Amino acid sequence: MVTTALKSFRWCEGLVRAICEIDREFPGYLLTQSKAERQMMVVILRARDSRSGKKMPLAELGRRIRSDNKKVLLRKNIPDCPDGLFGAMNKVGWRIMAADRYGDLIDLLREPAAAKVLRHAKRITPLTIHTLKSLDPIYRNAAVLANLRSDDDISELKYVIAVAKRFQPTATDREMARSLDHYLKKRPIEHGYRTGSMTQWVGRRLRKSKFPTPPWEGTNSIRPLKSIAEIGRIAQEFRNCIADSIPSIIVDSKHYYVYRGRINAIISLERDPALGWGVGEILGQGNRQVSGDLSAEIRRAFGKAGFGEYLGWESLGFGYI
Image (cartoon, rainbow, N blue to C red; front, side, top):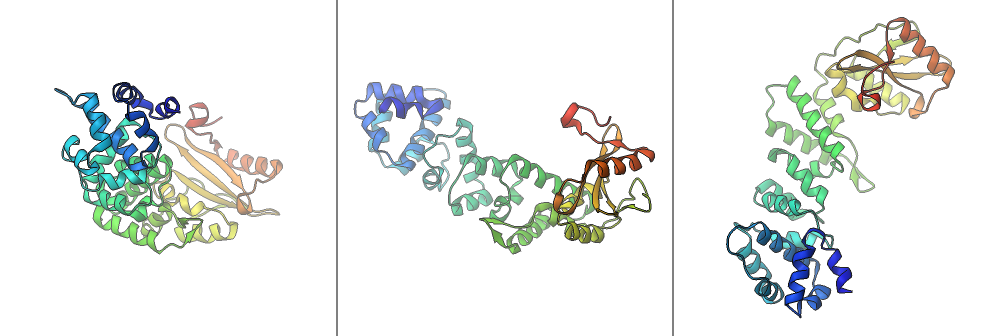
């Protein structure tokens, strides 16, 4: 049973195993320790492992971990130990995180905005720590954090902030952070998450920005969307999320066209940084796929105007065929 427990300690298994071999009472302690005690022990082992100079003998370290006051032990072993570290350990759970995540957590607890978020968080995961560490301190608040559930979400936030700064150069980070926090807090909660996205927030901020001219005027049946208000109306009509692309449209890297016929469709025209504009997705109501014949008809119309098919760098490493 102890051997199985040791494997769960991942990068610090060797240290824990060495203590068990020296301290006969330590294996029993491992099997009865709480979540907070387990994580606290790992933090102390990480601090010992990264410390230069004379280190506490493993036998003494094992005895202290078993018997000393936990908060006192943390303060003795963690340089400039931040308030709230022991409480944070209780929210991390049983799973051992990567060693660097513990260092990041300690750094975040020293920063007031991040410490406030962590203090009120119900649980702390590696993603929580990674997300907070990735953000500028001004954007570290609970409402923003609740909308960041992956690396893609973090990248999206950084992107929309960059777009907002580009078109509103006089706006400060503090003002934008307050605006984003206010917008997200007003959104209703569904399935545990707030509805409304960060791209919708920046879209609202950029409503008065100059709308770039679409690269093609279209035909009688295919016409471009030429304003943010029109994008909002079409998004409602087609029950899709094209409004989330407003930042990309404002920086002139994407445009949408509407096809009106027996079946209506939305066409995206996207710009490759090196090769120019190409036709992306063609979708019907509710993001449903259109027939192959209709897709081919629309692509032929764009082809006559000089637009190929957009593939994106992620598919083959270049843009069009």
